[in-house]
Image: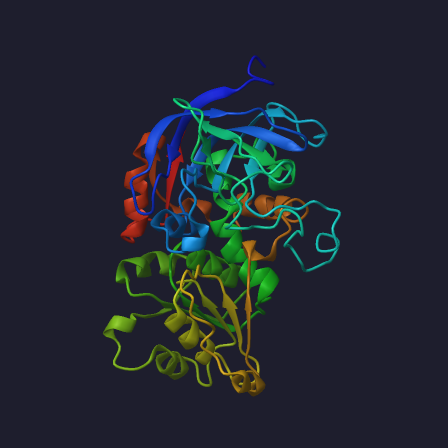
Length: 380
């Protein structure tokens, strides 16, 4: 291709400050270095991790200018030295947490946080040389990376360990959702909680991740799923993924865990905190059965508050854990999950609530921020 080995100038939505509108502008994208891949992004969307970073909720993560974005799909434009598993023209998913295949984590069953390429919200440069691949077009100033991916750009450079090659027949606009939200939710239900048939589930927060948890619970044969959210507009979508009972904390005169335990005597076997709220996490923990309850933490917590649990409460037979990317190893486990989704096990169409052109990205941010969108698919 004519662009291989050359700097590419393209459009990107650049974050210049916390909470400021992203600026659509020309940026320069360097060629990929050793074990790196340069992608042409075709579809991207915004999840709550992007939203939290856009708001600047965690000061330690702030670095400007920066290109956000991590849920996407695209095509390989060129590869750096040493990349053998993919080539120009391949269809791919960028994955925010990588898999080198060589470290002790990658070699361990049930673990998915690669020692070298795991997700790191603080990371802002490439692994190989500690430098950025983005620069402003006008004055050649560096622009920082985000979550190993930076997909709010027509072109991006990513470590090959964070890129998954997919079948060219797969619809990229749909499977782009599997590079983060849907995989995170369904995987938490399957890989982390390991929901058993006929079990009971409570989900705190019915955004895309929470609804994906419900899809996972439905597929595993859960007998009852309870959905908790302050936005009743989400309840109809919840019914479509098998949620049969709903609780709006704003309309209840009792603590949520008390309401859950009224619906399921003794509490549910599994609860999932998908709201990024310490209060919701506490309620989720107390909603589970004393003796066999499992709580899985999925929400993004920007607050410095610590876990709202006394150590002695863990001796009551309840446990709590967290999940990153649903426990999936991105290169070795995700391909089969993609096939399962395209065979109908998970309804991906349900999660695409809006579609907009890339230049309307700030509208997409506001739709998510106002709770009016699950995923707004942006076409580049």
